[in-house]
Length: 100
Image 1 (cartoon, rainbow, N blue to C red):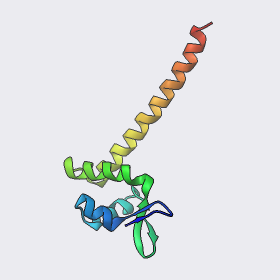
Image 2 (cartoon, rainbow, N blue to C red):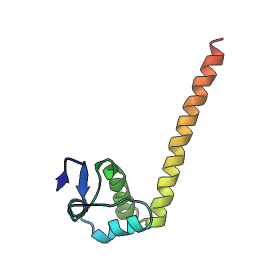
Image 3 (cartoon, helix red, strand yellow):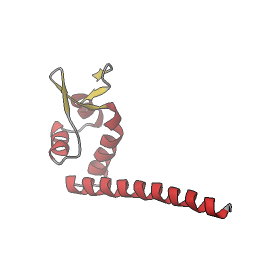
Image 4 (cartoon, rainbow, N blue to C red):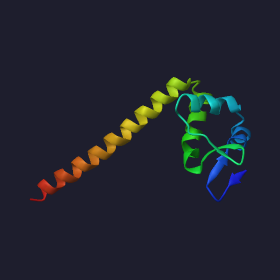
């Protein structure tokens, strides 16, 4: 059930789609990895978070990572993204000096 007006995806639908128990999402929420919202008595997540949920499901199923491992991977991915941004800023600054 997609709640179009607010762009929410129901957790029961995600459970069926990924063939995973609701307890997985409850554990993600309790570890601070997922924000769950109640819409019309249905647990949901924002549509924008589906890509991250899919990554978490794959890390859990394919690599057998526990919640702490998933958290670590996401923290490392965030650090990598920040380093990429910093590198691009540094390259742009360097280009200014090279053009002089």
